[in-house]
Image 1: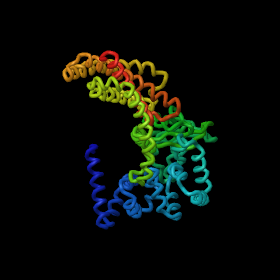
Image 2 (image 1 turned 90 degrees about the vertical axis):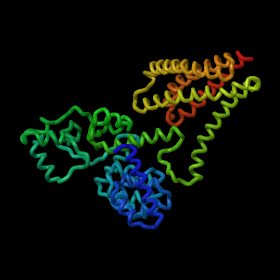
Image 3 (image 1 turned 45 degrees about the vertical axis):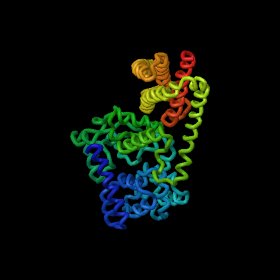
Image 4 (image 1 turned 90 degrees about the horizontal axis):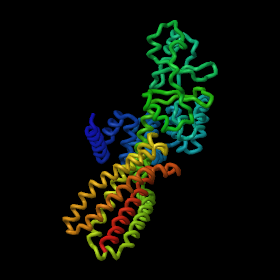
Length: 452
């Protein structure tokens, strides 16, 4: 299905849902919800204003409540949780896997958490507490403790009988994990190998020990990179002593990658990916006001630079007309470089180790593009105002600003990363300030020197 077809299908679904809610016909809404996955229901709920969201939430199958809560954005989840009593919440949460439950626990009332823990058997409670003991941005928090393990000295035939007696396997099980008597991870054996190996062979003879376990303290970005590089469907998670403590599956990594992409996209506008589209106007305005205020400060800085050349602008009006061209060209070029570097940082491809090579490359690109477009803009300015000196000034200013944009686009995100500031969040604001100030300073400064 193409992107356009998918978009059309989703918008049609939302339109039909809205029409049914407007008319008060809830039966069609219920039938539609019953055909959707929990993830799709979550997207629908996020698309509705709060009053309609409450109605639709009441129609969701209680068996899906827990999964839907896992998939919705944090702010939307808070509203849905407020609509549920403790009994409904307890029922919804009991159906979740340990890793999904760990994601929700911090959003729950303390009284409900205590009740939930008391209602669990000791094994499940210990597993949940184990997952919660790891840092939020780590493999330990993403892992599921539901794993199937076998010993190396067991025959293939015995393992197959064990699997038949078990009756079912956890989702996305493509390998069984092999451990020793102390629970330390040895390797993995694929279901294919089990089915095609001679029954009398031992697991030790068919085990694949080429895949090391992922440390529970590994960051989520590194986990995503491991899955991408090795095309894992599932991967073992081990503690500091190499004891198997859980596994991570590809569906969780897909959710992780999507969340990271949403975070980067929203951060570039100073927004939060967990923000409710229909959040109260006052709260949304307050959040956005912070970045508008920061942008205002940077705008005043650019205006201050322009003010220093007020006398020049009063005498040569053409400079005021052409001034936005220089800033705009620098802003676009800088954004291109910034986006490339931020992406590289997120993928682990960019660091201070290769910063010099990247800087040289981007500066060369800036110089080439600067000279190309400087000639074009200079010819337009000359034809427009009939003064070759203005043409030369704007050409030089464009080259200078594109070089500054390339330089800033590489170094700003690296510096922000070093100071533990999200480059996707703050990089655009800082870069725009640099290209505006340098562009105005270069253009108006050169104009003052050569035109007065």
